[in-house]
Image (cartoon, rainbow, N blue to C red):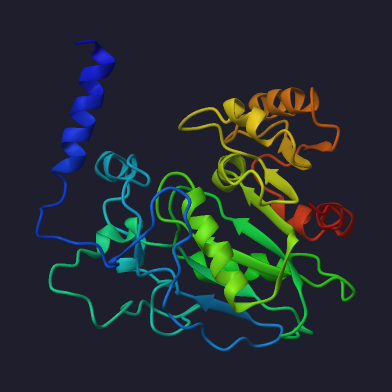
Length: 319
């Protein structure tokens, strides 16, 4: 047996024994296989014009087989406890605790539930409602993927600030959805169900759905778009991270999508050279591509999102 095979076997063995069989995740509606949409039965909260609303309509859906690397990451990395169990801003809390102390997520968990298995469940997400929102009007949708492997104590307050930072014209208002990830990479299946859940509750222009993200969300933009190849009118990956594997292999699956890549030459966290290679590879068959180069290190994304010209570029595309 080759070394890589031994390592893979050991990895799977460890993952299968991290949790006992009598423990279950805090979600129990099994997601449909492949990319068949799974519908939620949880009612949305009331939408308030100009506000950021937190929505947990998908957190009762379990996605088996997603992010198999997360359990190993948990036992081999610095995250010994899950941030939502003892810090601020639990996205599953019954109240919208943007800046308050920790609140328990739900009061009806089964006895077998291990809240550390929350990574198996659908994404909690925040939604920015336009100032002049009208129920019968169709809106563009921008899905925004945050960075890092898992969130920090600033998760919800930071998410709200980021969403309010996006440039928005009064003449072309749009919906912003920002899911909260627990895991290594972003899940295309979970994002698909999120988009469909939004479309069931808000009139969305299916020809104007966009995807953007920063750092791990930047690589997540490529990953999600490579699976949902007919969903997005344009994508905007910012400082896409290069680990745990190169996203360069995804170029052929996203080369038909108008793409705006931003990266800084002195970024010490995400690889500039890989982003440059991705731009060059996409440019071979994609004329609708922009490579925005700055010297901001691994920061400055808010300047992209509040830039009128850049956001109008994104929103100008239609399928």
